[in-house]
Image (spheres, rainbow, N blue to C red):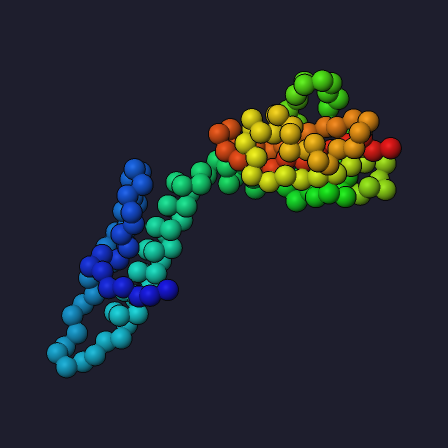
Length: 169
């Protein structure tokens, strides 16, 4: 990280279409007699500049990535986010054909657990909702005669992951 000298304590960021936070200017320090060198003022200004940069970074991050999404993930984490082939998933709503159901409490469980109902046979990243619904990405993981299920977590208009599941025997 390189240091830059600026006239204001907060660094300038590229315009994002959102208002930038206003950081109040530090109170003026009393003048010291000529010939004395004060190191307090320089350190305080540098610390204030660093704090201002951190605050600006956090505000930009919240505006860019969305506070609701970050808070929602913290309060209700996606327990299947790290699921991979070989893992097992607990009971999900029963669906048939091309029917879909929303699930809020899916979770990975030990495959020897009595809660284990589905085997994760494949995982596909960077899927759009349309790609996930088509189910083509899971064809390579499903054996002939297996009942296949798709589980995906994809934000509207974004990309996410798709889990290819089969009923546990």
